[in-house]
Image 1 (cartoon, rainbow, N blue to C red):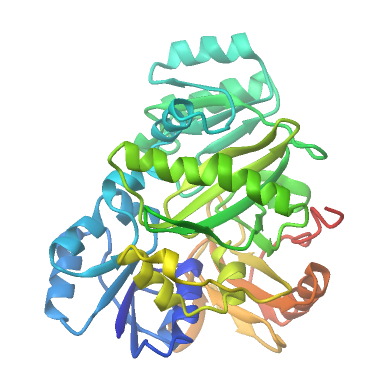
Image 2 (image 1 turned 180 degrees about the vertical axis):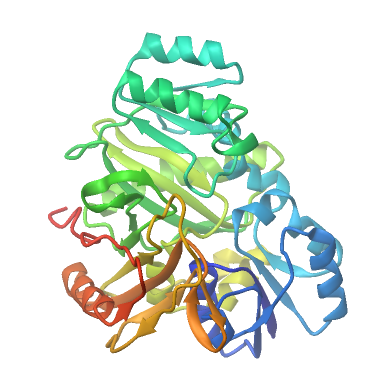
Length: 426
């Protein structure tokens, strides 16, 4: 088979690396791709948010048998619907199902309607009413722009001043554009041991009939060590989550995963693809923090390297609604990804910095914001590289990853030094 992966970040490079292992895949394509994907796939210079341009390319390349739509933006505008209408087989939800991520207001209303455990919340489109609500509730409190905002549209406000400023930033200053026309304001969930809590990401394959969770992972959203600074798309991940247990797994499957799949079916929005559950362990059990309609980034970078089953087999089983027939197996051990970012990220940063890579040992470099210019590897985004290492334990894997980081450099390179430490004791 010839497979096209749509997207140009670390997640897409990780998906391509997994597909490259498949005995059933002949040639890989990536639209638009980066310097890393170019090493294992044919990069396609087409804007994947231009649906007509994507359709034109696909129609001119009938040798492409299967398409993986990986990012949230093209899923939210219905790219899968358009490609399926052309007769193409795809992995990824249709537009009416991708709304579970594209609108936080939709997902909160869904959870309320079907009694799926989550934080208490209210939804506002009027700034003054939202401000009154915040002042009545007090802080800490969480503000979420309704629409897609590159993983940055969530503000955890520790005091009332922060909350008032955050509300103005989202609704009046339009820091996240039209994504902030509607806002979700919710209680700040508290974990059992940490503040603001203990979060875990659980991704699942689902064909609308069966839902199969992947191994767990933990993301580090804040830009600086100790979970300080602004939210980012993710500064690193590790797998598995140390506090995860068979009891928690059963609770999540029975009270969150299955009910979500059934709820989407009941709403006429059958979800087929990768459904991401951002969860928090609280004194009242596991609760949903967020849904994503696709593989997480950088969660994918630590999950797929541990997959033993052929990823292409899983993708096709989801497409054909026969996921129940596939046995999905995982390697033992742990995996850690340290994200290397441009100086200034997640705010302003300069592109085009030359990257030098020395000895990185056993680590795999997953490219995100990279390009080749005048024959040299340079930065071309905020998150530039993911340094991924496997080990028997999280500590073993993180030591290998950070040892590899020592061999990489560019002007202004920044990264967190505490990836994998957060839940060391579970």
